[in-house]
Length: 106
Image (tube, rainbow, N blue to C red):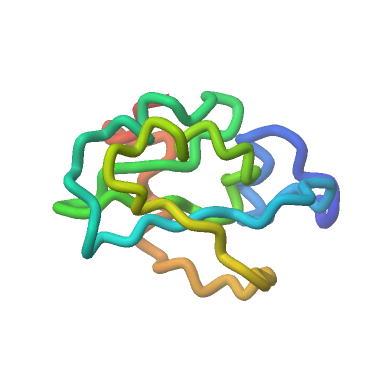
């Protein structure tokens, strides 16, 4: 499956980002986030990258296309691109339990 993760399920299974996506994935600066969930509600379901994780809101980079639909709805501008992102598989393992769980809003 390497290099062709086009569906959300394929990206979850392979823990890889679609290589065709040109924009860097995004991250949420939790020091500024007010947990309003506006970003989560605006993340397109075919990406489904944003999750509530305990008190935090997280974006799984391998699921984020960088479409930026979450940016204009954030009232505190706490969402930013991960400049120079490369697949490092350093996403905390427990983040991968969020897709397809009771916490998956997509």
